[in-house]
Amino acid sequence: MKVQAYAFKRSRIEIVPLIDVIFFLLATFIMVSLSMTKNQGLQVQLPGASTAAKIDDREKAATLTVRQNGEVYFNKDKVTVAQLPFKLQTYKAGAKDPKVVVSGEANADFRFVVAVLDEARKAGILKVGISTEKK
Image (cartoon, rainbow, N blue to C red):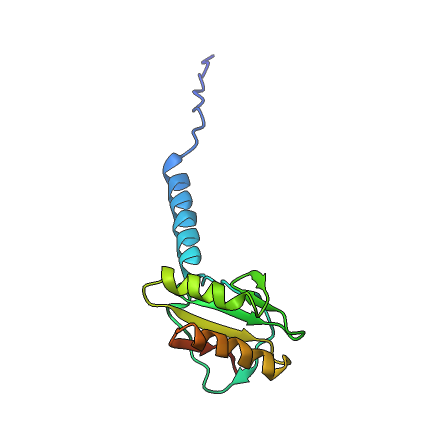
């Protein structure tokens, strides 16, 4: 009678496929985070325009948000219309090429938006845009 010896192989965790998966997830995370745009202002319901265009260097522009009730925000900081000239002058002094984007809610009173635009022009900021959504 012959006795056969069985040799058991030790199981191994293959590390190379694991590294491939980790690098794939890392590359995906980096690509997604690079494609996100920086929004400095508050989220508001913007008016629609058929000629709306995407702004490439929005992260370099200050955002002035005008809410329906007349509240004004400089980036995400609530300010009064009386404080706005000081904020804009400070921004203009610190920026090499100052730009302002006005984001007014779709149902905001137009006089509040005009007051904000007027303050930006008084501060000497020449590059002023109005944020809209594509229709």
